[in-house]
Length: 181
Image (cartoon, rainbow, N blue to C red; front, side, top):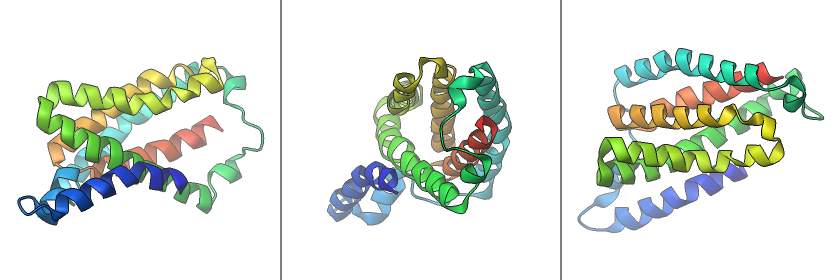
């Protein structure tokens, strides 16, 4: 829950500040943040991306030595509990609001798709580098995080919304948690 609040706070501030400006307004501020439902086609793209991203995540986890994935106190029952699932979904939503909504939206508008999307994927990668401090053997996750950030940025660009990417990201995170345990 804390991560959701911390990740969402910059976007909420952006929305409040930009939404009060006369020339932008709340609807345009929400659109710029990618807070739109969009068409069903965007969600079909999101579901189609689950397969390659899921395989990529599985490959990364397969490269990590077994001992590096074991965390004291973790079990399948713990990972699949309702509370953990809600926390994973909230954290994912917060990440998408910040990285694809606010940061991706600004960078895609200002730098175009090519440079803007690569830069938002690098920025998305930064907090995930902490995994290397936990255990350097988790390195295979790092390229997957960059690729995932890039693909979700592409989906944000294609759909104009971070919501389809949130669906992919949440399912992938829950799936990765189940595979790792």
